Image 1: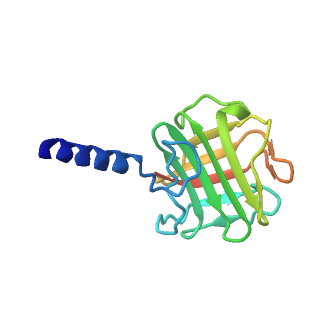
Image 2: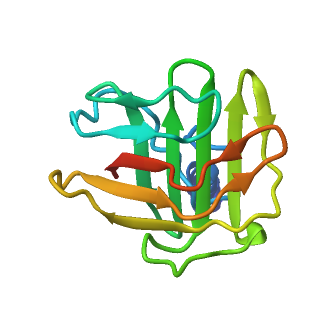
Image 3: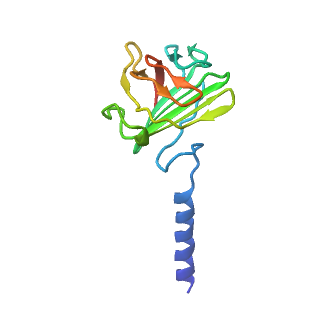
Length: 162
């Protein structure tokens, strides 16, 4: 009987540990928000021309990341003012683009208002940064209209690579 109780306790403990979601994401299982912290220092991090209301940032304290997880890719920026962007999709950084609006998730918070609905495809080009191997450059090749805010065609993010 003691063996049965011991096995049950171990099984329950394993279930609790495996079901624990310790990341700060609000998306599907498998996507892990790597967080946006200035500890990921590179003077080449930046984002420019993202959207109206988004302050361009660059340098060591710029909060821009790209994360390749299993099975998701995530891009996130925070301008430390009033604009935050999170995009993720199932695949890799080499996923053929464009992908349809039901194949990716986007969330923008601008001036305290959240926008997350679009019918526009995601069409980005992701390439190694020209001078910093810790970064990837993300170029938006078409706009994404979210109602009250639009991610601009030609917007560029130089993001720290996780």
